[in-house]
Image (tube, rainbow over all chains, first blue to last red; front, side, top):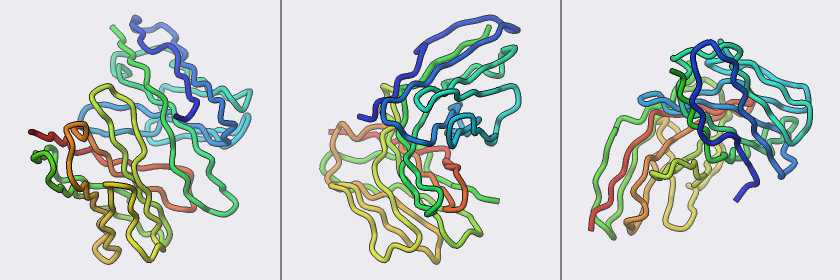
Length: 117
Length: 114
């Protein structure tokens, strides 16, 4: 199994509070991703990173920010959580070679179940 | 727009039988990759199989094979000799080579019965 750890695994919080989810990898992969999974939508990309301090927006980035200060850690922050951000959040990593345009599969963490009341 | 469509919200198959899960995609990019993932009830996402758009042969991984029909833009997953442990959600996904993003379909729930 790819060495990906998400923390916390479960969290319940209140509307308006800040929330930070952490993804930690031991594979030294360059690419890291944050997705959310909601019924009827599959997985949707929030933000991703292609290197330390290099990040870009995904499909559903509003209300979220990310940071990557080290290769192994990718943080997802909800500055002021809303009930619509209740979801299961997945981190993924990939050893994609961007220069060659090759696709490598993304490997996923076990997910964080976030409930915002 | 790039899109993945999985038209079967649920499928049933008897143990030891083969099953095909449908996936069609829409992209204008000439180069792309196609992926299938399995999500059991425990929630983790498990990579199953990959097909590149320029691969001449259909991908196979053990009991999984990908029926790739480029002209029809379809990438169906075939599971042979189904097992009870195959019961799960299955997601098809696509990534154009010139992007860093993976686009998922809404998934198909497969249930294998004895």
